[in-house]
Image (cartoon, helix red, strand yellow):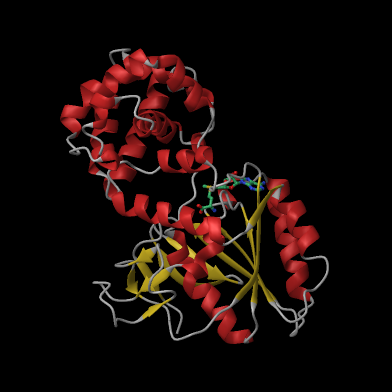
Length: 348
Ligand SMILES: C[S@@+](CC[C@H](N)C(=O)[O-])C[C@H]1O[C@@H](n2cnc3c(N)ncnc32)[C@H](O)[C@@H]1O
């Protein structure tokens, strides 16, 4: 039986590795040093003790990083901010560490309160992984799309059609791409192998649900989403900011509801003249067995009575052992990394 400190050290180490692999050396370094600090029963232990009883998937390490980042974004830790790239700092993790540790100690009640609130992210990059699936449905059906997202968080991926996707590496005008060239959200260098982009798609209805939806158009919603971006990942931060700005102009309701109930209601009556795409990303792992079964059975039922004038498709981007898989009605279309980079389209 691991001790509480061992549990927490395991989570911090796992998160440090994830940050290193996904291009956040600043967070990777802070987290590695935090593991060593746990042994001293110092500030990291003070901040995290007790949270080791939470489930593994609840991202306690990311919640600690998000709590400190939130205070930095709110200009409450000016000395530490000098090293946080998200607010113009130099990204020097060694110089940041003592200030980070002091913040955990001095702001302990605030930090623990923020950690206790949980982690709620919405990764806009996953639109790049999902893009080819939406275009495939539009291409097959020649129908406008009605998109339903389960586990939508702030609903930023419900606006996937408002973003610009470049298949090339430079993002220069004239390269093959899809979407508004002037969009505030641009995906450049996301595709190792791009899906076919010479396909039109029109979204006529966008709705989602989440147990804890975030309204990205409010100050609180935007601050919360920004706080969970890794502080040296300026591309992610800028795409998030662009998506938040677009969300103000392009409404998409995300209702507070359980995915199984939402889906049952939304798929009850066929919607003639549109292709319905039920989609989700990094969502299935959070479901209990009952909810998972209800969702699968609702989708199976829709698939078992196909209507050419009101087809229903199921698009997903979920983790496999090594990569994230993009599937349409169960068929593997492509793979990507966790935040939607490295898309490798496999479908012909
Ligand atoms: C890791 S987040 C992913 C959010 C978004 N899909 C993305 O890729 O950025 C998982 C989301 O699923 C939501 N969730 C978990 N269980 C749910 C359920 N039973 N019904 C609806 N939403 C749920 C969580 O609240 C959270 O917003």
